[in-house]
Length: 297
Image 1 (cartoon, rainbow, N blue to C red):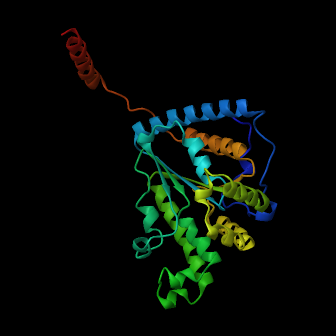
Image 2: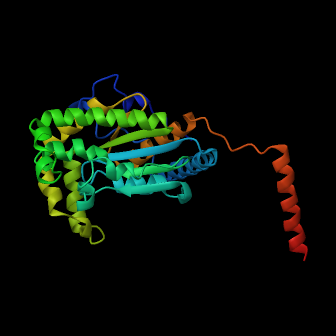
Image 3: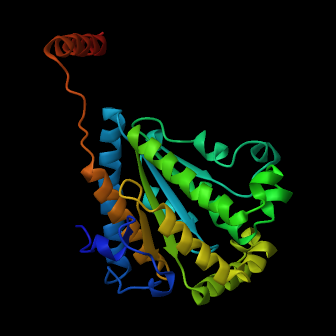
């Protein structure tokens, strides 16, 4: 059972402008109750697992799924719920936090590029190279205090980010031309809901270990981040690497929408299980007989 959703409500592929002020953080629920949510979630997981297994066997395409959002928007839980039950043999998840000293010694896309999905596989980035036009744009001093770029490159920060948008667009074209399909999700949570979740995190023993003071400090730059996300989406959305802006105030709804979109994407890819020729089938039947004979011994 698929949700009756319209891609136009969430898709930004560069053909239209994204306005974050007009973007919804909540929509009418696609599930009646918890029981229906669980049923839908299980059905999506099963279908995604079947298609991912077929993609793995086909060994031509790969899928890169990127999640970007403000803290407490639900990236971790969405990845956990959407991927729960998927064969881990063909799925990898990478979470990118503050760059290490080693990562800072390389170009800004190095740490993510080394983890691109192999053919037949699905890779999920929890945050990504987009941090370089989000966090760094809100805090441009990072360019000189941490990334240590040559002075002549950083004299005009706006030019730096304009070039980074172009670099990202070129990279995503390159990836697409090599069979890597890219889906980019911005989980759009409201400031009020984010504050509620942060307080819940502080008050819950199973969650308060995750709390960092820096999260509250970054919350003070909310408007700057919203502007950075708007600029980012408008400058990097394309037909081959679109952005999906998902209302994130209702976590269950958000997970179902993400699941539906990933499933729809997999269904568009032309892959099949490898066809065994007659000669190989004869060989397999011989091995089958050997196994049967071994069981008789």
